[in-house]
Length: 296
Image (tube, rainbow, N blue to C red; front, side, top):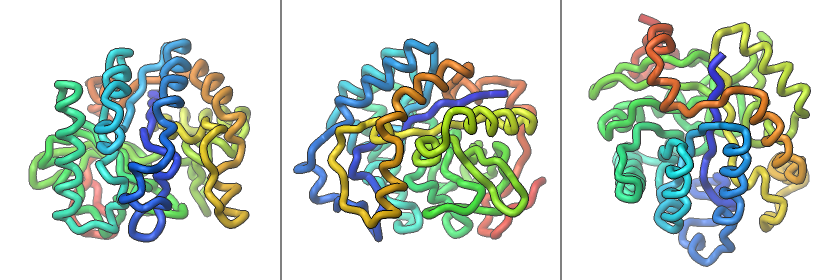
C-alpha cells in the first residue's frame, strides 16, 4: 500500500466561513502568527521517522515565511500549493480561481526555483459544480490534484467521484486526481485520516481503518494542518459543537502524528506519481460538467 503524508500549510485562522475565512483576508496581517513556530516541529517529527511529505503551502504563507518554504525543501520534502487566499473554489469565479492559482504558484516557484506540480483546494472544494477547476489547474502546469472528498462532509464533497486515484482529461492535458482516503461502509463513507478526523479517532482505530484501505489497493492519504498540533493557538469562540470539531484532542495530536509516522513508509505525492507501476493502475474519467464522470 502506498502511504502519502501531506500538510496543508496555513494559519489557525484559515477556517472557511461564508465567502471568506473566519478571519477576513484584510485582517490577516494584524493577526498573531503561529505557523513559524509549529511547522518546524512537524519537520522534526518527519525527519525522526524518515517521512517524506508534500507540503501544500498557501501562497500568502509562503510570501510571509520564505524561510519556512526553503527549509521544507532543504529537508527533502515536496512543496506544492494550496492556493493564495484560502478561498473555497465554489466561492470563486473561474477567472478569480485562475488568478489565485497563478499568484500562489508564481510566489512559491520564485522561492524554490522549482516547478510546482501539485495542488489541494481549501475545504476539498472541487465539487460536481466546480469541475472547471481541472482545466485551470492543468493550464498552469499542475500534474496532480488532491481536492476531492468522495463522501459527505461539512464543506466541499463529491459523493460520486471515484474513491481511487483517477486520471482526468482536460483541455490542456491530463491531471491525476487523488481523492481523500475514505472507508466505504455502504450507507456512509468515513475518513479518519486527516484534520479533525485524525484528531478525533484514537490510534488503534486509525490503524484498523488503514488495514481496510490496504485491502482495497488504494493509497492511504493523510492530511494535517499545523493548527492540528498547536495547543497554544488562539481559540475562536465557536458554538459548542463546532468548538469540539475544531479543537478536540489537539494536545494529543502531536504525539499521535509521531507514532503514526513511524508505522508506514510515508512518501510525497511527487514520489508516488513517479512510480510507473502505480501509474499503470490508474483509470480515466472526463472533466466534463457531468454530475458523475464516466470511466473510459
